[in-house]
Image 1: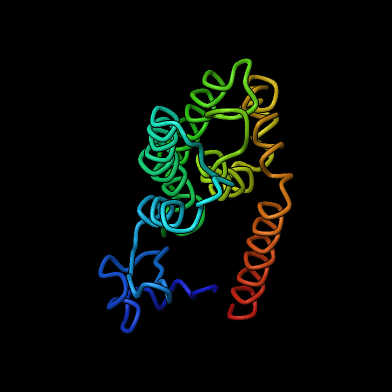
Image 2: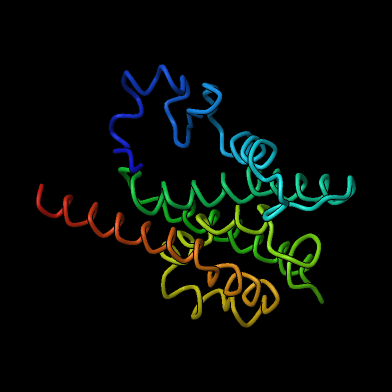
Length: 197
């Protein structure tokens, strides 16, 4: 379900998420309402991934998966989100803020690149929720940095293990579908904004 960002600060959404942010879910099977992406991912995996399609079985791997999810939530999400804010929504142009959050975005790429040396996935030998959790913000970062991705930051050249991993995860059919939906939604929002001008 796509929710208009204008309504997340109003009822009835505030009764679902008092923080007035996305995402939030209400599980029709259990009735639980959760907000905060990390909590939602952990809940969905624990409740519905009995076959281990997106998780791993050993105790050590479970904690390594959580480690990467927590890094995504506390490291990638906030920096990439602030990059988006200063590039798209902030009423004043603040070049130093844009530069700072581009630098921090690229720093996250460098962390992932180091961790992925000689590996296809963050944990174990298959794509897991830890890998997939990075993809929505990865997609947006590519759009926000734009030509600077290659010209200024040389992301794919300087961070080849990260670049190969991101391409591998983005190519998964479900991830590809979600990212295409995000692209269509973004295009529709841009058209709507132009029509209102």
